[in-house]
Image 1 (spheres, rainbow, N blue to C red):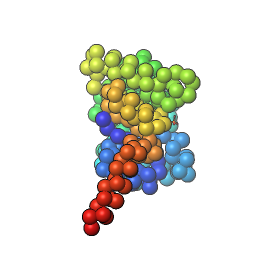
Image 2 (image 1 turned 90 degrees about the vertical axis):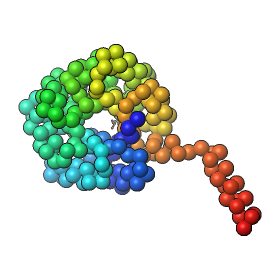
Image 3 (image 1 turned 30 degrees about the vertical axis):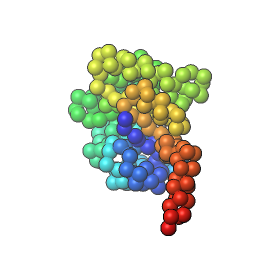
Image 4 (image 1 turned 90 degrees about the horizontal axis):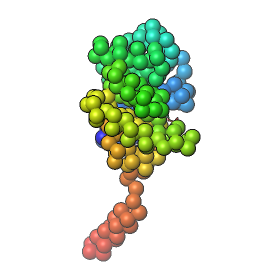
Length: 217
Ligand code: G3P
């Protein structure tokens, strides 16, 4: 299972990278705005900075909502660095643009996916990644994890190569559940990733080992 961090915060990206488990980064316009990164030139520079920090795929989202605009933006983003994955919204023109980019060998991530049917279309269009937003489904009393299972079943039925990128992951149990369900990738905040480290018995056990070591020295 690949681990992506879902942030535009360079310090958090560095921290996850230093842990040695990071496979990539996802961003979106809201995450950029949260870090105060606004304006085309600043956003482009920020993508470049993120690519320098990590080895893996970096999703960069287009803001156009029509095919021509998405193609223009996506081509410019993809030209920044081979690590860039063009992130496209799950709308009609987004699917057309996904097909365009996949036929040119440019990596894509179809985002804002909330149903199995949308994920099927993204796979048909040759998406590299599909991003079902599990946390936002949970927010409206719908089982986000069930969507991961449905997509896994459909993709396995037909051998689709599109990778399921569980997004809108909010906490550590989301990561564990996505791993059980066979999600190819998860993207979440650093806090959710670091939650995987924690167990009180580990802390108690380590304290005892160190205490016993001191007794013998
Ligand atoms: O990866 C998608 C993510 O950025 C959305 O997360 O927490 O805003 O639903 P959230």
